[in-house]
Image 1 (cartoon, rainbow, N blue to C red):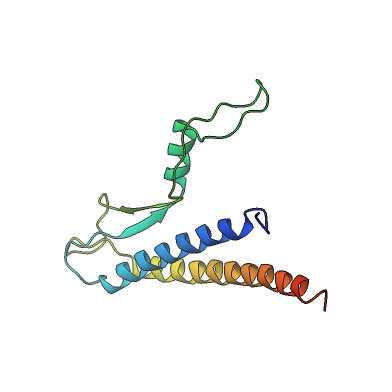
Image 2: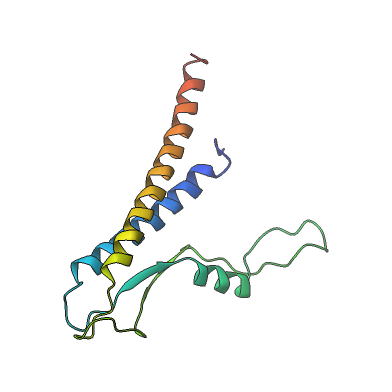
Length: 131
């Protein structure tokens, strides 16, 4: 029995994505002055495109529904950006961009935490009998 219709699972996966993105950004900031370091990013779009092209497994209840054949466990992947160089030492970390992405990711993470707390608060209200 799923109390929230998969919402908690989706929030958990979103938190995992945000955590991975935070790790990548932190690594980029820490290595901003490291010669030949190439920045990393966590992407969802590439995984979505791969999933759409390879399809996702689902139950077809009507012949007119789209056929789905495969399923991906990870909703994101970490990539290394090798095609650019911003600094004279071969490094491609743009510290201003990384700081902006860190702030954006922090807002996203906090909103996910707020949402999951709301779900647990609703469950707590039900357990207490509406009080």
